[in-house]
Structure formats: C-alpha cells, structure tokens
Image 1 (cartoon, helix red, strand yellow):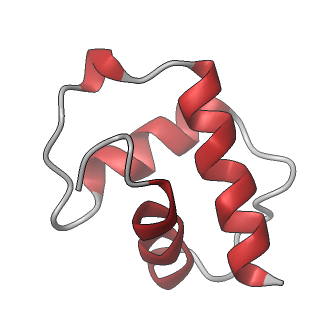
Image 2 (image 1 turned 135 degrees about the vertical axis):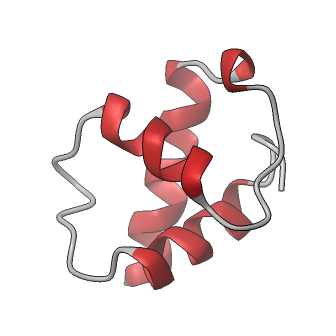
Image 3 (image 1 turned 90 degrees about the vertical axis):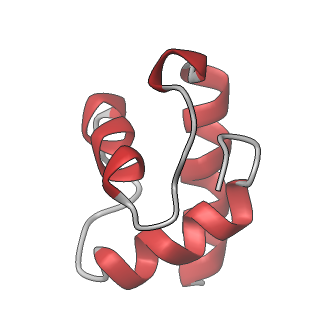
Length: 64
C-alpha cells in the first residue's frame, strides 16, 4: 500500500484498531498506525495533513 491507497488503508486500520475513536484522533497517531500496517510500503515523508485527512475520512466512512 502507498499513501494514495486511502480506502485500502482505511480498511486495514479498521481491522487493526476497531475500537479507536477515529473521529477525534491525532494525525501523529494516525501516521504511526499507517506506517505500522502490514503491506504498507511508502516513504513516511510523503504524507501530509491532506493525505492523513483523506485516510481519516475514508476510515470514518468505512466504519459507517
């Protein structure tokens, strides 16, 4: 997975952190969790607030 794979990342995050409040989270935590996902292989420096926000929104949608 790469940073652009927001839906795949959201699905993996939901599987890895099903009980987390994904609405009120810190982007530093989100970044760390994405980096720790199995199958994630991208440059940590390529992430930014816009990408993390897109991942968060996809995760919220995935849970609903």
